[in-house]
Image (cartoon, rainbow, N blue to C red; front, top):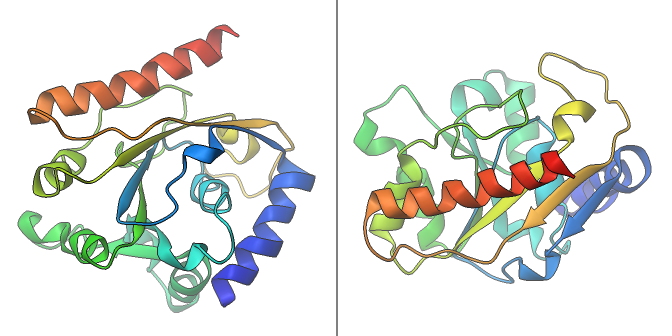
Length: 205
């Protein structure tokens, strides 16, 4: 209930009346899970912008994956991240073979997960190389759909290390689902090209 109210009121107010956004392909978003949303990472607003696209009754099944040492570094932020944003924490200090276990558990529950495969925010408006986690998930669940979501402009709204938002129209491009067909490098390259081509097109507009 808390998350539905948060996204249905506070976040949507920010999106429509303060920040401003244009969305292309919203009808492509999955209506149920399990499914993976992958997005380029420009700002702390990224997850809020994407998750707020889902109907309020569906938001309880949609989560963002984030670093435990950042989003759960103190009691207040932990509470906000868990109950308002809906963050599934990844512990980067445990064994590598165990890091993705929370994601696997959420997939088994039928959740829709938002993952930023770059692993950190990119300040240049480009796309950084993807971490291997995406390919490991795809190899384990080859029938799982991966929806690329390309973000543009949010780094200008709330830049890294800044606390004040600047009104600026952002763009969200939702692409059709991709599936793991052959091998890891081909899958990763295919996803990467979707992002790089859209960002290059946006840059030249």
